[in-house]
Length: 279
Ligand code: ADP
Ligand code: MG
Image: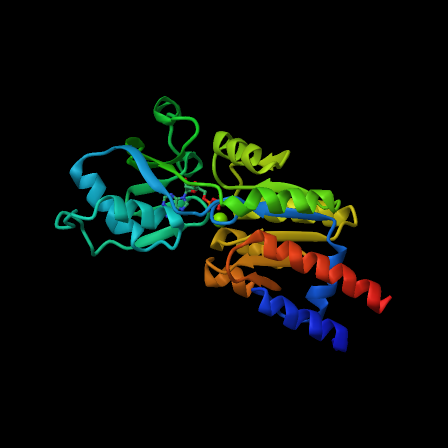
């Protein structure tokens, strides 16, 4: 059970907007060697805006309808971009399924990242429409790409300072994202992270956590999405953003209520001071 010093640190963390699920989490944080970070919603606001698209009216109707079944930040952006759309042409009897970390499926319709279309016979269709620097969502039906949406997101102003603080303390930072290489690189540069891996599936994110654990490192993972939940659960210390999905919070030991990474750094410093008291 937690010592009085640990309990006092946990209560201090809570006042600072960082919730710890127990004393062990507070003590583990001080041992963190490497911190993997998700991009969307974690380093960025996850507040996307549709900046360009190409799709006919019926396709937009289908996509807006489908996105109502998703909790991904992209879904809200696409729904908000077409506030006046009528859904009268949509066959609502057909069910919508989430394709984990990739997008959505409804019958023959597929909406999501390029990797969601790996089963398509002609990948050139994607390449020809892809615009570097944006998060892209493609729409396909029966082996054919019938539309796309390009979306932009903003880096949280707090991210850069927090990244620098962790780096100065000797914690290695690595960006892990399901988004494309160009966007990952842009965000990594903006916040000052040298190492990044893009186009990842939720399983790939676990793989990076486990590789570091095999090297005897204590691994932190911070994220907000359903796609991050398995990696959050695997890390020694899973950290969820307060704005994240409930499954991300359930899979984590720590929750950053106000989404400010600097608050996590405050707790990290606190956990170090605490360890010195215990030892
Ligand atoms: P991150 O790891 O940065 O949080 P995700 O793994 O959640 O990103 O998403 C990766 C990509 O999958 C998105 O950039 C998008 O192209 C696609 N995607 C995921 N969910 C959806 C959705 N509901 N609608 C459309 N595209 C989606
Ligand atoms: Mg995310």
